[in-house]
Image 1 (cartoon, rainbow, N blue to C red):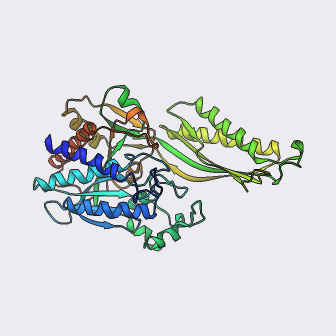
Image 2: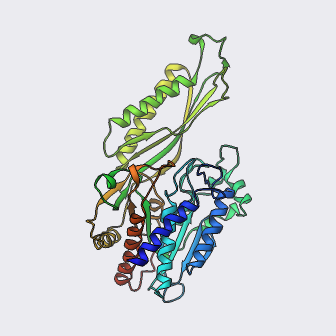
Image 3: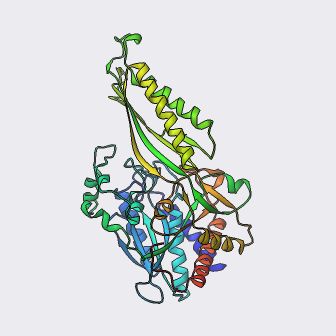
Length: 423
């Protein structure tokens, strides 16, 4: 337990270190977006820690950092462990990053013990899970899973910089994105440790949870288009103002999702009025919609109902409207076999395993297209996430490290020769 406790504490400490400049774009808050100087600094330091832990480290064609610890035989299939290293604006220090740091520490524990497994262990730091710079998320894990489309290179950030341009500025070749895909047989399983981002574990006095499935989600962009005009000279009854239309539509989203089931939730996280001046009636209003549910049919029914109301609002107000699907992620159940192993590892600590679904999206739901997946949740204070108040305890991180090490050993005992199929 001493080794697990040491590395669990260190993983938390490393997350704290990366919560400030130069690992953040902004002094006084954590902002680490994909393909920025802060992202680059984080990868440089992580690569050093990976190599110090006994791994070889490389950046792939999607901008992910991958560390590899060889197994008993060279080029063996790998267990992939990791999460994301990017953050939302003014985010917390442990969302994503803790899973990466714990993965590095698990490998170092194996290396210190001189332990080689029947399979390799790789630790990955995905570059873009949050979608905080570009409108679609999980581009990097989709590239690894082989499900990314080259058209993503056309996406632009808030400054009008395309993903292709950002890749080039980061010394990545945008034409080689698809080469980040792992070949069948290279990866046989994936483990992601992540803070819960919710209050369930804390409310029940539990340090850890075992994820059963990740909710389905859709991201859409809505644009109401009217007629820009002078704010002081255009009578209210003669306006074609997209602002009130957007407000009405956003309330419709709230109403529809509040009356749903299966954990249905709807969120508007971004609103922009164009041209965005105090004294100008906007000519257009853009806003995002994020709709999630544990069951895809429930999510889709909500999106359909909201879409119908949006179109009715536009027609009634004499406005044009467009609704663009930015991302469609299916519900992703975790692998039953891996989940059972993770439950046994949790039970070995003396805590009764607690199964729970994830309402938040994670890279694991994308990697499920490549191989079987498992997820471990770590209690976070107050269930708060995407917020500087995000907090975890050293003891919980230590327990997570112990469980992850136990899981790896149980997996080695169960799979002395991992399948070379893609799963």
